[in-house]
Length: 389
Image 1 (cartoon, rainbow, N blue to C red):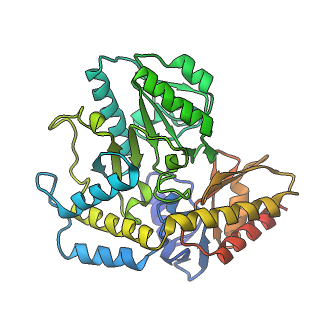
Image 2 (cartoon, helix red, strand yellow; image 1 turned 30 degrees about the horizontal axis):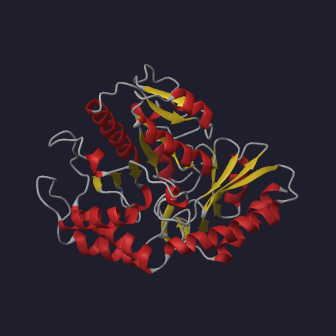
Image 3 (cartoon, rainbow, N blue to C red; image 1 turned 45 degrees about the vertical axis):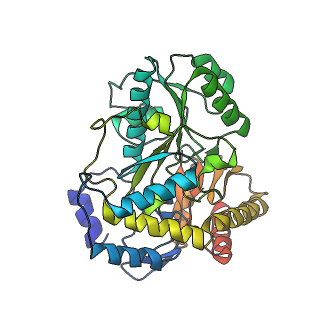
């Protein structure tokens, strides 16, 4: 245990089950520790580093804006903020944006917006979420997520209920004209890389239309190009009413965004919502650079192609491994479900200098930078194979 790790054990809240390594720096899909050991990053900072580590365009944008204006507050107009808002509206198909600092703030804002909209519609019902979901760690968002994240934090806020993932009949039975919203991840991350069923999401959109219910989609982990579309809901030809976005939006700088249709966003009046740091010039300028890079370097198309390559490789390589129950995902958001705990497998991969992650107990989750090479993908799959045999 090095000095950094000793200090963490002594002074930091003990809430993270960290791998025993102190990272120093990174470049592309690689990182190095303080002892000079090189690792291949198949985790991407929990789907934040879609452009890899220290992409030159991100570094340049950080340097440029840091010499101009970091923060001014939302009492003033900001050119980078307005520019980023336009970009996100155009890429999402929605009408308006509110900027915050993280995914959990975005989901909190989605709930607040939905409730204000519901009040104006005369609704007093619940917001329905899906089982095995994860929307953050605030009290409100754990009320919409998996039960294990709620343990010890009662009483939970009222106004939420949950139905089984991808079970439209259960959802239909739970929803009525008083229901305010239905919310879910297009691909569940912490729940084990579970992909929403195409028939489910399309029927849910129709149900929302029929009963005047908002569809809120959580794109925090699966958005910003990771699945082979900018937002994963775009695979299914549906348009949500509200979207939560964060993680990869600013290439590694903390950011969050709520996107909404105009008739929903207009439910909030002046002073109904706000933030000190959200949408600051620094973050928004860097986010604009990230979105420009995604477009110019065809990152979304790369994610689709490399994701298909990795999926095929995983299925080919692991087809005879008895412990592998399923391989699923979209683009470069992939999971290998095992019939045993995944963390020991992740630890074995770490011993071979591959950084991966265990999700929902039995799933090895892969969220590599979208700029990863096919040769690097082959190494990840080879090391996984060796860890499983």
